[in-house]
Length: 142
Image (cartoon, rainbow, N blue to C red; front, side, top):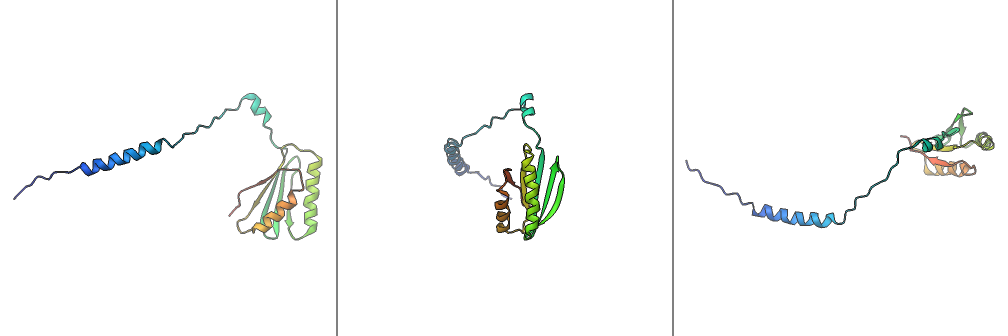
């Protein structure tokens, strides 16, 4: 039985690594590392961030229905049929009552199911924009 010695030629591998190191060093000069300065809350910062006096959640559950939920000084929950003007009037009356009370930190969170059309969402947004409360668009639920 013959045994022969095999020589391993590593020259091509060294050539590849030489080229890769060159590209690595060249591309590293274009990468910038950014730092985000974050401060921990102090006693003065903690007192300035107040809890909202009312939380408004409006969820569009179907193309013709929505659910209104209010938590805080006033608690309320009711269904809105988007094609009935009387239901819109009830929503308007509730929001005008909140506006008159000047509740601090009150925002409207609008969410919708995934199957709701964009047109329906924009119609609701246009209606809610007449009130001074900030409108936050939440995640659309599946």
